[in-house]
Image (spheres, rainbow, N blue to C red):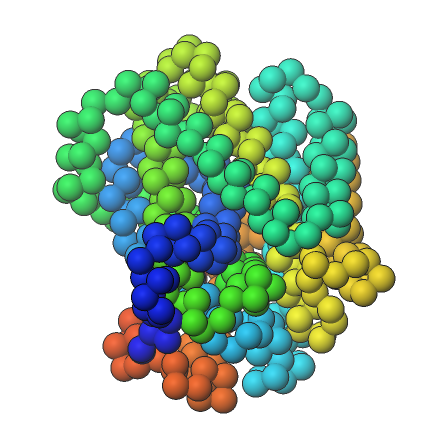
Length: 420
């Protein structure tokens, strides 16, 4: 595939690094935001469990997972930049309303369950600091609703990009935990795969929590909403790469800090909240507080993006207006759906004795069922000249894409089989 964007141009442009930097800053955002938001409450819990239960043994898996994430996200970004349309709209146009309808059912249910998990993450993180859920959850719901409904896309994107910076809390926690870096690099350099049910289940969980169906719809919609086109693709690709690598770096340090503290002491946990509390006597108060702060930031971040992704996707699928740059009167379905997702998510967490763990499990099963189907449609669209013009996939890109689809499909089936 040939890049249509070049950094060339008039001589004055090539001689001006400031103009080049301004161009880059104008394009970046969708890839970094989409990848980092996947380090949400469920993701942090999964990485915490990987470190606590398996120590450093699964650190090496982040390298191939990152490569797959880059591939899949690049497909979404390229399709959005070249076609100028969101993924849901393209699926409806090329495969019909019936297929789109069933995909939307799966995505809405999955995203709703994940939104519940994000507000549960807010309650858990604030609970570490002594704030009750009846105060923290409603406040968080109002905050994320107000941010998106009352702000423009540029303003929302700036807030999200700043939120990405706060993931550094996990990197600092990793250093405060005082790991033996020799052992860490040895675990990375000498991959070892345990063929036990528990280890394989965790591997599937790491893949599933890093590559989710909603990400493909949100990234492509964000590229389109920002007005990026094929001429911006080279920078868009780097945006995707930087985002994918940064999310894996954060995951690396979450696994690391839990491995050298909880794992070394044989302490079992069931959630990221328990991990933060258990860290206090092992890694110090500051490491524990930073861990909990990271959970709060991630949960708020994802509580904004998941409902937003759902609103984008459903409105695209049915041909409704779908942009945060529109006023409520111009895109009522978009804002109503976004508001309902937040309202239901927050109220569910506030409901007494609600079974949050089965809800989170249900969302992961749906993720496993929906993701291979989404990738199938994406590959078909990327090979359609009516959609991609001259930027259709080449033979190598198709080979890698199909192999990735089959591998993820098998992993998804393994996740469902091993979880039953």
